[in-house]
Image 1 (tube, rainbow, N blue to C red):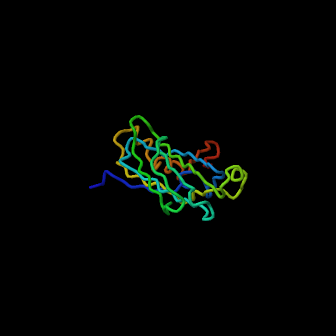
Image 2 (spheres, rainbow, N blue to C red):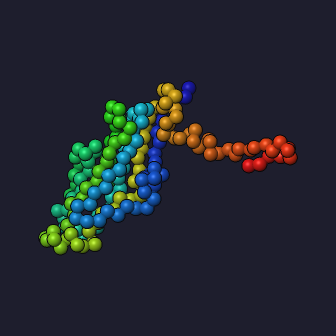
Image 3 (tube, rainbow, N blue to C red):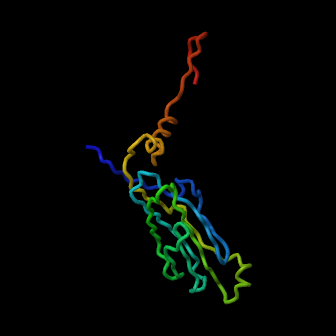
Length: 171
């Protein structure tokens, strides 16, 4: 019997969110990205791998928002190696918006900090998303499957066109 549920894990690089580590600079850096939540999604998790320089002031912080609602906030000293954010499908929406907002400082003077190029955080390209979803229930879901199986099959064969006059085939 075939399972009706599947698991898929994709890195941010595989999802084309970015191909290199993302460096976000400034005292209040912000980055927004969107995760697809197609109809067959049961649940998912975003695993953010963040890096913040140790020389930042200890009261620096990072906040994560999900659909513009605060989800979690970390001080510099408490940022975990893997920030896990649950993803669920919202009715009639095909995406969940994730925002990363920093409040970063190196000195006691925000005016000096605003001009510093030493204030940044990094979202690593090996951050990933895990999807747990059911197989498609109808043709619409089949055509929008997370695996893009149909797309991969289309690219994997060559099309030969017969030439009637020479009775040969060209690619």
